[in-house]
Length: 270
Ligand code: SAM
Image (cartoon, rainbow, N blue to C red; front, side, top):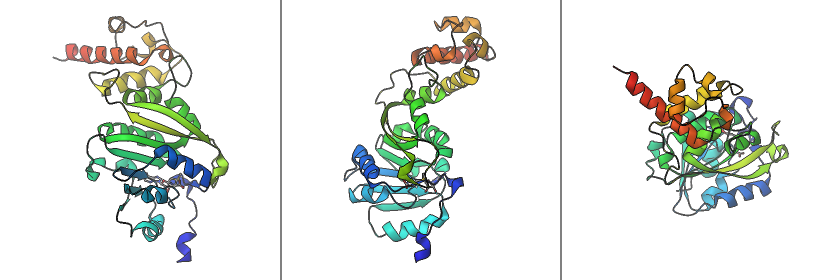
């Protein structure tokens, strides 16, 4: 039995376990879980957040990739009727499996830093199922998510996250709160999907394409970075000055460019 408690943190799974009860309490207060909530915790690890989430009476699904942590999680929580454990990769997890009502799922996690960006994109693809998300991330990633146009942090992550969600950078957490301590500072972010998108693109994939292409070379002008996918005329038709650099454009301008891209493709197709 004692063996299961001697889990050695695995780098490849981004394991930095929270041990600071002050920080754990603060995170739980920010989430404010309640009976009747349906929560999905990604990467419960040794259960630092899991226990308080369960105590709230919420229905809790957790997904953990590390087979070695499964016996410990079962031992600690499997008897609780509001607990369901899924072993697997959150990046491949089909959130529809949980049969959530629209806009109901509350997603939480002290995320493994190596997969946090693809995981957030995976969740954004399912934003219609989600009520809110609370994540521990690298502080620098939270700053990029919450960035505003005009600065060096404004980029694909800011635009695609803010397209779908309101972003709140709640508070920072130092390395000493984890075991082992990570090399970087962390932060808690709350993402709340918009009830109505403030800037609706005709096709969100076109928006992602334009944004990727534009920020591929962020020092160049838009006319230059977009030249392979959007003509100078199309950029003007979107009411965008092609001599600007991508970081100078706000969300509305990117959405107009994406809509022009859709229109141009429709015109080009036979
Ligand atoms: N929640 C715990 C805590 O706060 O102490 C653990 C956090 S640790 C930073 C990240 C957790 O995510 C680990 O338990 C790790 O095994 C798990 N994990 C890593 N990659 C994963 C994946 N692709 N899918 C699901 N869980 C994953």
